Length: 421
Image 1 (cartoon, helix red, strand yellow):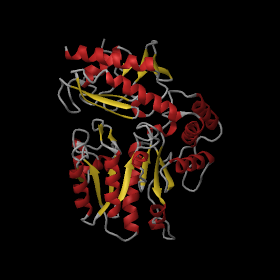
Image 2: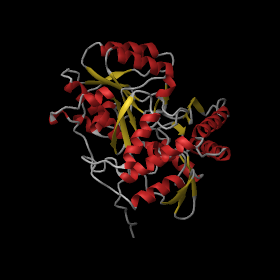
Image 3: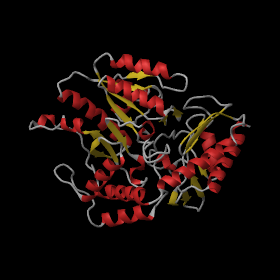
Image 4: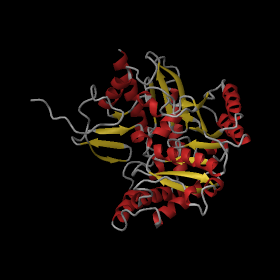
């Protein structure tokens, strides 16, 4: 008898070769547990969203309490306490100068909102600035606008007819910064640039490619010199991943627009926020209804999600989160020391709590043949990884212990031996 095929279509999954998805029944701290009791260490924070750990009691309690009080209300024409609390807390935490918060549902929509804010700003000012600039190798999401801002390639090749043209700026890798700076300056001189968008300090899905805080500061300076809006996509980097609350903090810059998601609720609920400067908000304020910001979703600022975010941000304010992040970053640094002389790995790198390294013997690129067998081999050893082609990265929750991290790197080492034998 042919096994029953699930009706579910999973994301970023080739169902022709990936079968029998493990069913996760519960989670706690940095661990997942399957229905048959197998424990799996979550070495990628379940796609970069879990910060303090799974099922944090304070966040769970906030969700339960809010669900019994106010579950949902249209956010056009109404407000509620959880959203007001989160907005105020975010403005207090974010780089100084950001003044308004627009809620949405995911990282992709947070960036989509940012792009629309930027274009709306210039249109309402009567200036013909309509072009977007972005870094090469960027990934900003899977909606049409965010795919357009992202690098062209396998992620979006099928959807090319939908995408608008975006100017590409070389990534300011070490030793190549001047090429990037000159390209940005030249592009901005055209006079029609509305905004420059970047993932600050580290490009996630592009392969965990890292650049310096000084380079980020210079990119910001050049954009501002030309009056170009600077959009920081901190969907991944926000809430401590790089060692500071926001990656922009390393460069001491305030973007005109800041995109947040993933860690906003500690990873418990879908919620995103796009923060902007006062001038961008004011450009949309008028007695003319045609100048309003035309964006929404049915679940904008869902009260339950906002309650989870409020609880998460309170943890940031009342618990030693920064100390835990620093300790995890140090443990990650120690773990990488053992790899430095290991010929199996190259391009070993770290920023904050994130480490990444490439398997030397394998083909590069997202579709590298090593990725799927390596993921399976790690899973067999009780560790969830999701290599980006031949690039392995470790981005665990902040509650991770030294012994757990030792287990992760041992599993990776054994898995690489198995799949490269």
